[in-house]
Amino acid sequence: MEDPWADSAIGGESNNSSNTVPQSDDTAPGSNTTAPSASSTLSPSTNASSSRPSRLTPRRLVAQPTRLEAVEDDPLGPLGASIPAATDTPPQPPLKEQLPLRTTLAGGPNQIGGGRKPGDPHRIIEEEELYSDVNTTNSSGPRQPPPVPPAQPSSVRTSVQPSVSIEQAANPTFHIYVGDPHKVGDLTSSHIVYSVRTKTTSKAYKQPEFEVKRRYRDFLWLYNTLHANNPGVVVPPPPEKQAVGRFESNFVEARRAALEKMLNKTAAHPTLQHDADLKLFLESEAFNIDVKHKERKEPNLGESKGVLSTFGISVGSGNKFVEQDDWFHDRRVYLDALENQLKGLLKAMDSMVAQRKAMAEAAGEFSSSLHALSTVELSPTLSGPLDALSELQLTIRDVYDRQAQQDVLTFGIIIEEYIRLIGSVKQAFTQRQKAFYSWHSAESELQKRKASQDKLLRQGRSQQDRLNQVNAEVADAERKVHQARLLFEDMGRLMRAELDRFEREKVEDFKSGVETFLESAVEAQKELIEKWETFLMQLDAEDDETVFYRPPVVQGQGNNGNNNNNKPAGGDTAVDRARARIDDDSD
Image 1: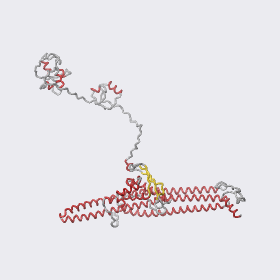
Image 2: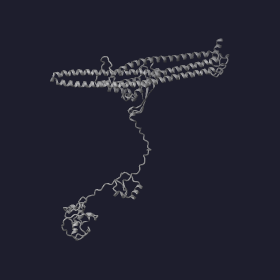
Image 3: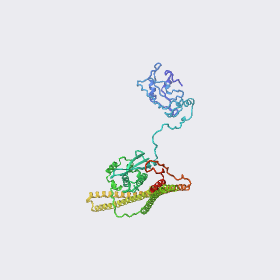
Image 4: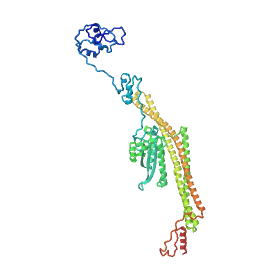
């Protein structure tokens, strides 16, 4: 093959070679393709280079037919062919070469020609890895990433509280303490104020721990409001009012314990714990002002119509309610019997507490008689045991008083609470009856509307406006019937769950109350037995004169007056005083 850099004046073959282009790989061997012109077959860069003057002498171009032939040995391809002379066409500007964007660091010569995929632009190449890439040739497969060290715990401690689970968020815990009862006000407006301190995990409150001041009527407001807001729910009731003796210490302590139990049971209820009025009661610093503001916004709050009035459903009494559900009928009979039994148990409990208090009073009187006898007894061996027995009777009196108070606070308070709870359950039954009356009242109203609609339909189209109005009234009456029926059914399902909860809590509370009652009784009897055994051990040690306590002997003052000049110096014991009285009588 001729030299591609040879002068075009050598021969015709050089002219032919200057107009040839390399055959593409897709063209079959032996097929000739004629190019329209030399400028159309060359690239823009080739056209640009053809405009440059030749370094040799000017040559004459002769038009020759174009012949394509394969260029195998020439490494430069068409660039090695002779370039035709420049034409009058202005040269095209060079185009910028579109190079691929490189986002990887230089990784050695193998990365250029090895066909390796671009790596992570944020990956840092270690020094050893860089040298290994330089020394390695013809590596097969992609390079393995360097090992990632395990994550280390951060030394910075954050003050963010850990998140709680869904169950804990849905069922927050409450610990409510009612204490510090003290009397405030003058003679006409005196009352007891309690401190209500709350600890909770609920996120609905501003702080996890807070304290407010409440009086008894605030607890009563909370009970009535929760009943109105949640028909069908058994709301734990507060203790009953008492006009006489409401400032006595035993009564105040019993009421404080009952109020604390009421709040804890209310806060533990899955429905009542999310009530906005409970949050207002536990958290509000200006409670009376907030309640008045709430009553102004909801003027019908005191009527206790509850959910029924929100639907526009009238709550009427109707005829006597006849229970159609056997399950509710059996529960009502059971609750009546349970209430009678609890009232009888409370009466027996009060009688036992009264007897304990009477025994305590009798022990106190017995102690006074023994002490009086010990003061007039002349023999020290007898006056000492009598005085010790008097002190023992005082201890027995204190034990009886304490046991009577514990019986009231442990077992009696549970009996009273469940008597009130049964009243709350019956109030829920009454709300269900009202829902039943509302349902049937709405059905009666619907029948009246439908009768008016049928009457207008029989009259024809003469009263179309009136018919449209009656149709709207019928639709509204049907909506009220549907809502009243759903409310009655939902209340029935809710009351079934509430009564089951009532039974479970009743078993747990009575079991805990009976155990506490028995434990306090056993402890009281152990204390009495210990005191009696100590007294008997003192009686057995008759020879020991230091067994029974004797007050120290106070020596006489001597000649301090005319009346004491002739009296011998004596002690200040009961025997000495008795002897002194005998001497005075003899004089």
